[in-house]
Image (tube, rainbow, N blue to C red):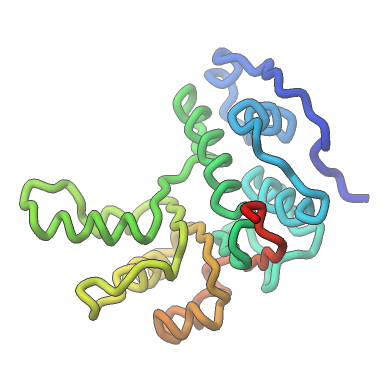
Length: 221
């Protein structure tokens, strides 16, 4: 039997700032769930998406059996990142945005960075890169994304920099070289990612990520 999160949790959060300050161990399922529901009360978990969503929760909670539902497409490992790909509008970006909120709250009150990761869309990264080229005073440096954990949203939607350079491919390659945890959401499948950024990226995807396919009907329809 696979343990999972309650389907009808209370949105009343009992976790206090004092608890966060005094607790530096792994975040428990119960405290994560209370914070998640409080910060993202509008997020609905459809029954058909439970195995995917709960597996992602379990990954961030660092549970050794995080792949108990068997949804990882390659060899699962907690020391790798996450690549979640699939249909438009199923909730990939929304889910990571909700987890990001939880991580930000926790890291604000404690040194626990278990659930914290910087977040940027590939389109926005490219926009900031262009702005930096025209503004010598800009604090944007591509090298800043070669450190720590990072969440890249909408991989593949960005254009080539100046129609010639795959900026995001460069980021992915360098982060793989440094063995950094990277989280990606995209509508592109691994084959399309390899075709876009090159086989030197495609071949490294299984080493770099736990790969999850998320199919379903868009909630926007």
